[in-house]
Amino acid sequence: MPLDPLPDWVPTRRREIGGRIRAARRSAHLSQVALGERIGRDHKTVHRYEAATSVPTLIDLLLIADALDVPLADLVR
Image (tube, rainbow, N blue to C red; front, top):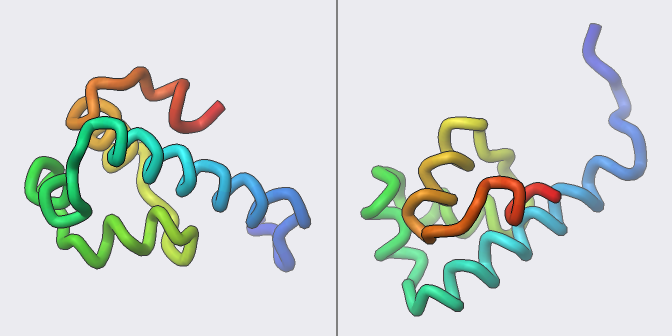
């Protein structure tokens, strides 16, 4: 059964995860375009993940972590 509306902490966590993706991408000196190419997604999708307007799947999170050479836990903790 889906939660509607979502608990207040969910959007906050999504923004935190997006910020961690952005920080890791910048630390790797990659543009959104370059990261998108590495994970097989459009740069607009990367932007949506970082801005927390779209939710990355577990597979996308795994691909992002691998492409940025960071542990998955560092992105979602």
